[in-house]
Length: 430
Image 1 (cartoon, rainbow, N blue to C red):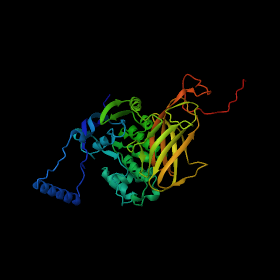
Image 2: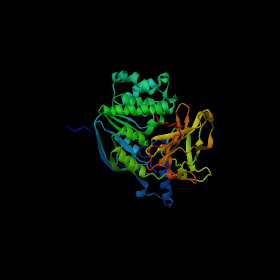
Image 3: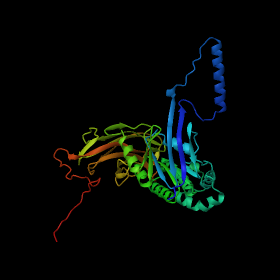
Image 4: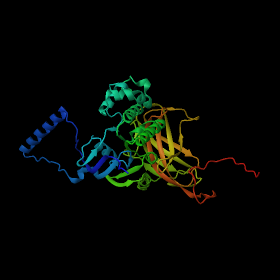
């Protein structure tokens, strides 16, 4: 059997940043004048006998975002790249797409690459959606004939027909990302590189994205997919890579990589402050600050008895007025598969206008979960599905195989599902 063509070859890639320096940035005239003035002042001080302290560049001021990373990717492989925030995932993609230059090592790319690393990369804000499709397509190396051939399909996929002749600076972040993904995926790159940014879209669009990437993989092209959503990695990828602190620690089957990734999680339950750098999808209009899992008497808990009611309490800060928003609490499997969810949007609560400030939100949940380990997901969204701030796996907790007080223990030896659905039974012998 003939070996598949090698599309990506990464050999000993390292990327070092010097903390405190604007590496790779452009100096303005003001910066140059300020720098020159500072040097003149220092020389004058030295001439008067003053000592100018020059800060030494110490090793601890260096940050290796990537360190000795090597792997190969063949045609038709769909490779998930997973890891905590700061593990080096996005830096790796920037090196592969030539946005960032590696400090050492090399990456060989064979074939035309389409990438979606940041919302609207390659878009001009003053140009319309129509104009940006042609601009972005040209940046990706496509001819005008190729772009015109795919144009209607791109617009339909993105769902922005009504706004096609509107400047993209007027687009919401969701519209931006839908159009950017549609261009990158439909202009037939041999290698498609996608960062988690696609999750800015609503659930329906995310499903379309996953389907499109599966189609790209089945056609023999290559996909590199960075995600915190382990369910998406499991469904989409035939291989995965785990990065930790800039190093590649394991490369193999998605199930093995996901299991290793989950075992490194330190977000187990009770009360937890949510760091700014926590895994999240956000448009910067809101931010979750903390989360608590509590028993009904207000005690923080990381473990719950079988059939024990509980509440989730979280604090969210809103930074700008949002006319039609709602909060959500989701319960998911540890690999990111959604199990159940609840929202303030419903018969008892219409969409509400959120004004800037801090909100404490409490959801008291019924005891329907069967014994397993679960994750709490927090979200605040607009009614059209746009995400203001979403924190997956904000904390973990466990439902035990034993009851509380007079409540019965879990009656079966094995757990066959996640949720205990109450039913009205009728049984007759025929």
